[in-house]
Length: 102
Image (cartoon, rainbow, N blue to C red; front, top):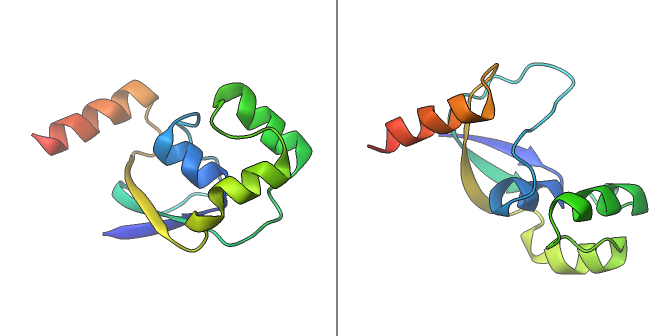
């Protein structure tokens, strides 16, 4: 199984809610079930990003320090598995995931 490192707090948002799309600048060669590892970088804990994510996922504190504290136990850890489907809508990817489970 492949793994993908995603910076916190976005890794938790992918696994636990609030974010159903992973945007990258280039293509990623990840399809199907993928382990999500929470990155160790602290650079993504900014006022703007935490506030943006809090509006979509209230479990993420809008305050960067509070968000960093909440997700610090995840840094460097595999926190879940997602199904990646490049070029698919969310509904299409969800259907692929459900059919793979049956």
